[in-house]
Length: 156
Image 1 (cartoon, one colour):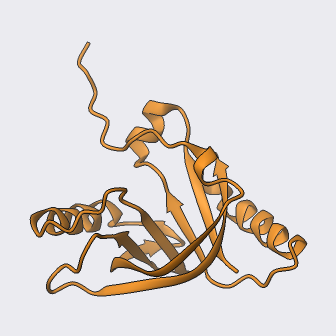
Image 2: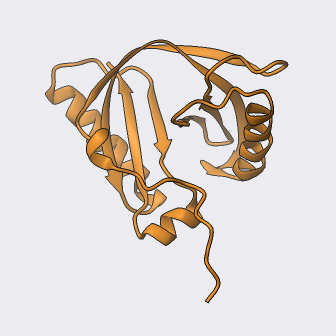
């Protein structure tokens, strides 16, 4: 049997679920993916292009974090954490306090997860700001590990 390659590290939900994280000017490379009804059409090619640039310029962060801002049915902004600026790419910083919840299951459940997160934030007496999605593994690795974890990060 051929050994299948794993490109994504195994995700530990305990490090994220129910935690608040604070970022001050956390640096990300920002790009855009094309979607159809929130289903990304070119996510893989956008990631490959950007990761190649990040690695070629020595900007890969110790723990690569990829966030998605699902701000349209027709596209999403993707944020890739970096250790330093990547020339000729759009760089942004994120600052704030974020409450995290880990969900597991098919992407078709995202709407339910958003409702649960919204309810959780309201129960905490907080105001929900921007909502980011952290897809912890690629689909191949999620299948290999048998778990499809998605972290919702709610700015509070």
